[in-house]
Image 1: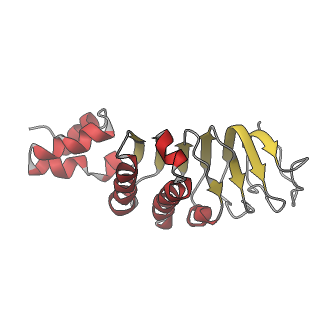
Image 2 (image 1 turned 60 degrees about the vertical axis):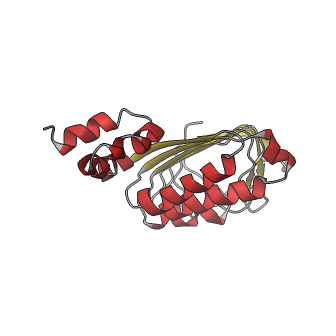
Image 3 (image 1 turned 90 degrees about the vertical axis):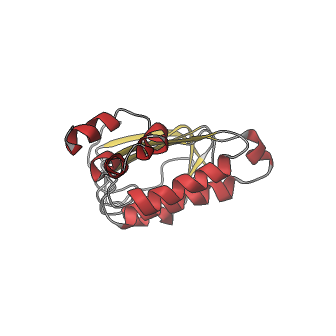
Amino acid sequence: MLPDELLAAIFGHLELKERHRAVPLVSRRWHADVHSPQLLRRLSVTVTGEPEFMRRLRLAGEWLALRAARHVRALRLRTDWPEDLIREGREPETAAIIAAALAACGAVGGLTEVELQLDGLPLELSTWLAPLARSLRRLVVDSESTLEVACSLSFLTALRELELGPLSVELAAEARLPPGLTKLRLGTLQGVADMPAQSPPRPPCAT
């Protein structure tokens, strides 16, 4: 009989969907192993598909908040959302589900890396980031739509790497960068002629 640590390492090579659909059905032991904290520390979640995209997104959000939040340290979330939702104007609802799941993961204080690939979903970087203030060290938001920074990000005191883009980034006048950045990459700035003044001065960082 294989030890639990080895089983967890094997299960870690499976896609998240495969891991949680089939493996738990084999035995009670496998069901427990597939939900071990070791497998939840680094997660890659992809939500796609018509016509049940919203249902899948809600389920993914609930699973992250209830099952994974205490253990996840690095989260990569990719959405490939249908054009029908754009026509129906459901962008705010979609963004709210994602923001709530991230806030739930951040509330327990352990999430250090977040990478979002949003496929055109407009997402406002605002107060949903507050629970991540002391833990988040790397934030990447990749979207084909404009990313809006609606408030100061200076409360993200642990953040070292920030990448927003690759297309346009809209900065509010009060936008401020986190004080400890060592790496910064922004898309084309919109809405302001220049980067809003930063205070105190930023230390040198890679761009």
